[in-house]
Length: 154
Image (cartoon, rainbow, N blue to C red; front, side, top):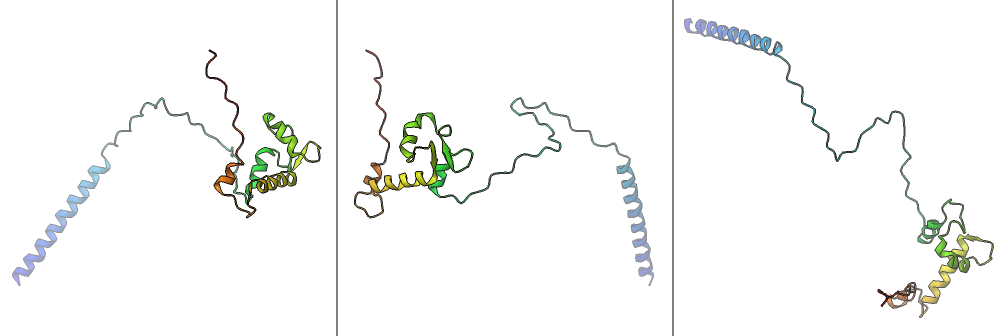
């Protein structure tokens, strides 16, 4: 019995010592000085300046459209999306091609005029009439190369 009492007394003594040691360590850490503030690094000269945009909001990202390939080609020129291509919208170097596509001559190119011309071009290239273009048939649709100027004036 004497050993049990000594064991309990020793356990309480060790617990008390541990408690005082733990509280003393916590008091030391709370009064310790704060860690030093990190030094501000010099800005990288390659970085762009950053500004606060405030309440400004940029445009919404573009949405994917379900346009056919022909409509995508058409809208490359139809800048204001009114489904009509005016002469100003066509590139100036393409004015002869515009006149060829404008069947009714009203200086407006509708999607239908564009599509009919493309279908006619496809049918002209499809020599065997199987509604498929072989690589050889497709090669006939390539634009004619520009005349090369001489490299030097000798």
